Image 1: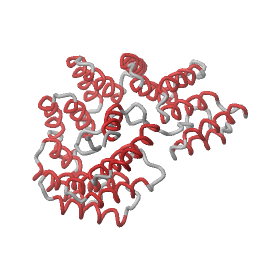
Image 2: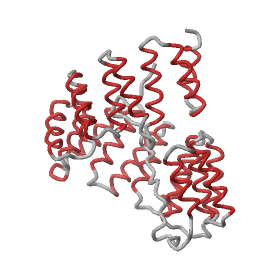
Image 3: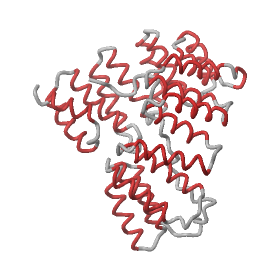
Length: 352
């Protein structure tokens, strides 16, 4: 059974702005109280409530482009990607021909919804449209390259990755994202070239960035040294990578102690809750892992809820409580029906 968020490769390639982008869009003077409430509901994963609030927004005559944008995001949360695509397309049709930051934001969401609905070609076309209008948009090249690589279009993908680098040469995190995409699709060695390019930036990269690069290169000793320096500077996210590095070095107990110490001061960091749970699973502390996943689930606003719910089920399965795992898996699939791996696991659990 798979467990989530174990390696350097993540599902966070498609990171969207999530902001309402009112500033500079001529919308500051408009009233959008119901839309604001809907977006708050979305941030709390209350997607049905959000759709009801967006209906009220439409009746109140609030901005239609923002209403349909919100509906698209809510439908994505409900895993109704076809409906999400229609909403985002409708939102763009309400722009009146203007192309502002808001329209680019919606376009990125549209591409995500197209991809999730299985229309990878449509998503590539959407990113291409963004690139046509904003040829300096490195993120669009990165995302289009990622999809092209998934389709097996290696040469096209590399051209996109190189174009992204040309537009943002001094961004070490960009090189890491390219590596993650290549590693995920079976091109780990080729991906190392991008990590080496990032390393060549030398004085322009922070200790934290250098530590991440070493981690992805598998040089865990140097990763530890760089990340320990970054830890002193309190850089955001350093504990996660430092803990993973100690895990890779085989020091699971110290990794766990790092996570626990951090959580004493930052109890709402769900990423660390999740990683601590994974570390405890690896160490055979299944009850401790379950407690860590459940602690993360107590945080209302979390983009990691799906991973935490799945890993909670994993913990119950390791504890041989297959009945509880099956019940939780049924609930999980009601919320995330497109997870084929989970569906296959559910069929197995029903036989236990």
